Image (cartoon, rainbow, N blue to C red):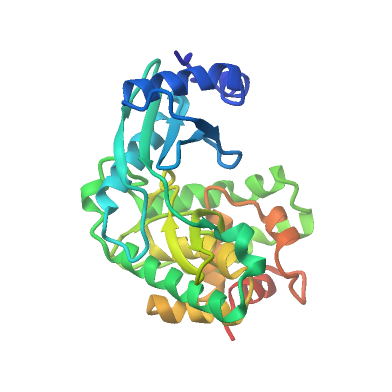
Amino acid sequence: MLPKVDTDEEWDAIVPDETVMRPGAEDLCARLGLAGAPLTRFTEGSQPVYAVGDEHVLKLFPGAAAEDGIAEGRVLTHLQGLLPVPTPQVRSFGPYENGWQYVLMSRLRGEGLAPAWERIPQADRERIVTEAGETLAALHSLDPEPLADVLGPGDWAGFTERRRAGAVEQQRERGLPEAWSEQIPGFLDSVALTPGPHRSLLHTEFMRQHLMVDPEGWRLTGLFDFEPAMIGDRAYDFVGAGLFVTRGDPKLLDRLFRAYGRGFEPDELLAYTLLHVYSNLPWYLRELPAPPEPTLESLAQTWFGTA
């Protein structure tokens, strides 16, 4: 029911089009024993995702992102019951038609942490950040080897070198002013990224947008969206955590580190920010506290320094 989507042009034409997507989602639900269940498409996320009734979520991956679907199904299956915060339970995952992959999973309870944040009292925010740190510690303590066949990058040093080579151009393409862009090579050269031999299972986008909370008591009730998961240096996961969970608040970041069990140097985390696959420094500069000086060193302290 769903046509092939292997190029950016096909993606742009098909994935946003509900007249094409919905019949395919309905057909797949019927094959999975959920015929007639109401479908509600979520507006967030890069992949088409549907609430299927009140209990299930169906996530679809076109051929251009099929490997992400396989990875998410495998990671969620591996994680079941291993973290202090619930993750979606996989009901079924696999191929559909024309290169598409799917993951049918349980729906997490609660509401998104990002839209709820402004309503949450400070003491509850602090507890949520503590729970987030404990969750990252548990995730990073797991043996990632059972997932090594579906998660990259394999050679972490090679990955960071490739990211370094394209770091300036990536930020320029996103509109970063030259006064910032020209600092990137020297800053990256000044930071020694020397992770130990231990590699961790990484979420890579550990942020408020992927955490759920219970408004009755304000506790974390879920962590989701593992399609971009990787195996690598655990400091890499603190890019999302620092930018989108603690958001430049030094006291909250200190609490996150203490719950995690260790901290990281601000320059190291800003270096990984620049090397991150989805790095968008102009956006972060608009969203987060401004540094007292227009330098990357000052920016590192502003966003990743602790109280």
